Amino acid sequence: MGDRWHVEVDRSVCIGSAQCLHHAPDAFRLDSARQSHPVEADTDASEPILEAAEGCPVEAILITLVGSGEGVFPPEE
Image 1: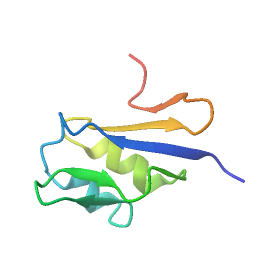
Image 2 (image 1 turned 45 degrees about the horizontal axis):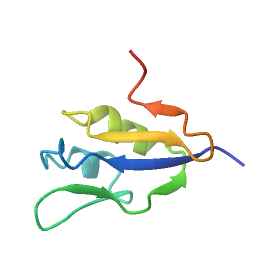
Image 3 (image 1 turned 90 degrees about the vertical axis):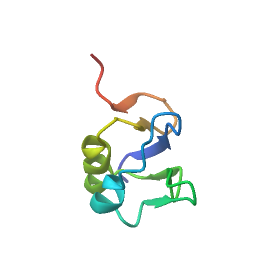
């Protein structure tokens, strides 16, 4: 079994660019305010979700490992 990720979108940072939908259309949705949110907060690790986080122009997507809380994205400075 692979890693499980906890995915969050910092709604105070999200600008509604929808880049996350471009990279991972099954993992993110925009609400009526054009703010992104994950379809499932806890999900299997996947390349499209990581690409969505990396492609977010304002780094609003935060990914941590379920259980340990260890950061996956954004990378530590």
